[in-house]
Length: 233
View 1 (cartoon, rainbow, N blue to C red):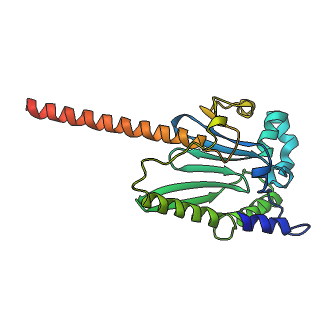
View 2 (tube, rainbow, N blue to C red):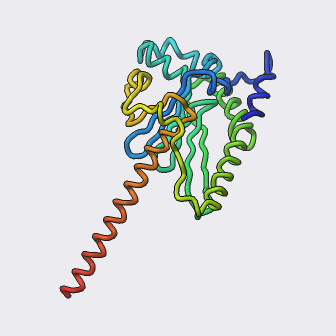
View 3 (cartoon, rainbow, N blue to C red):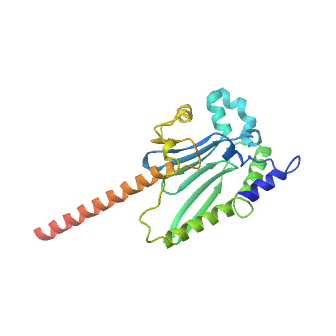
């Protein structure tokens, strides 16, 4: 997201304050893979004070405690709910739903979301941050769409490849929760200490593979039952 990084870097006193995208490579971050194919990517924000929710920290501490509050405010996260819903809490807040139309066409529906009762000032900041990064007004979504298009093009041209390797970062993968997950109170099947690693996709594809096998077994069983019924008749 070079255009986004460069533009945000030129803003000093004027303009919308934005989450520092360079923090994804500078700070502590990671990935989680869960049961049923769900996945999560997270990173510690280097400038959490620019987020609309930051001003509610004192109230959140009273309800949730200091540790959980800091994890909520100071971390960005992308949660993928298998198979096609993404909850994003990062440069702004977004729900993204994907729907395959055909083998080479996908519909993506996007919703901007925010907490109920948010002040007008915080809501305006959230929307400006959203416009900075997402959709046609933003400087981030265009990059993501190009990556998505290139991936689809590559998959279509790689009919001779026996598999797509997803082993990046494998020596760093942890079975079960890492320390950050324990603080959050979540229990992933796999944890990775770098957001660029591919362990979360392994969990996702494992679930996809088991789902496909179960579907084939069920279909085979139904065919066998149909044959038996025909023979009896």
